[in-house]
View 1 (tube, rainbow, N blue to C red):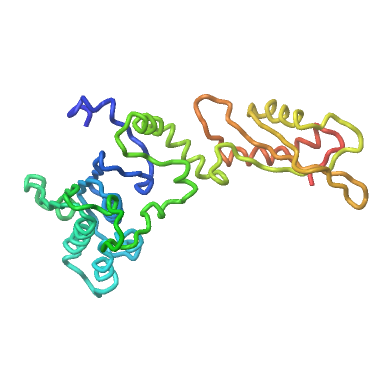
View 2: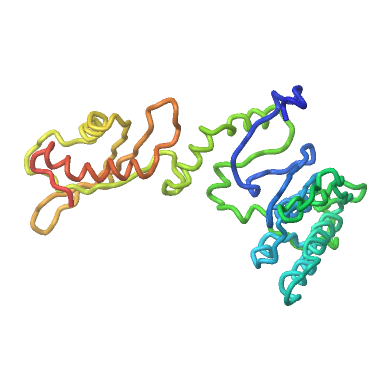
Length: 305
């Protein structure tokens, strides 16, 4: 792509994520080739909801119930007729689903042009390998789209954002703004690349998607001072595992009926390397488990509860 259009090199970034994490804007074109199954429906619903231009080549049309979860409200009845209202085989499934997508876009105030790909793309047996035979291009028409209209009493359906499909907590931490501004291009550039994608995957596995996992431990305290402190516990983790760790007391000292004292501590594991920004939960869990054996050995009289 860059070889074909070298002037776009400074504006080209590859960001791995979900379609629902896009924040569309009319200044950007949503484009997709081989948007398999419901991906084409998500794109059509997104373009209709936000009133943005779209170019899509769909493939692998599906009648699975999941299609209704992403179907645009602007063509809900058509989708329901296809998925729920028709029994048995449907030889014209591709035509009917594409029609529903087009109707959704048009009902949202977008002008739509449907084109069939040239015959030169089709070799003998192409139907067997799933080469799509059409593309759909839409753009803003003179009439208002749902994104523009603030008038009451319009025929636009009540919309639930397509972004509800992704986890809200993840969307709050990661979204891809499509508005063509310098600030947004800089943000997208920071999100691009394999390292950033790996960091997001690591964070997704962490509790509450935290970059620095937190885990607690409760200790029976020794009767005499043996040097056990927050700073000493931090140094133990750094020395044994070369990991930056912050330790803080949780609440006040607990005194049991027998007079034995206990204190809870919270360990926050941070990555002190420059190559990664996310500390993996599995690594933190392994280190934390080892602490249960190490603490009584290092701090005489202390015992994990």
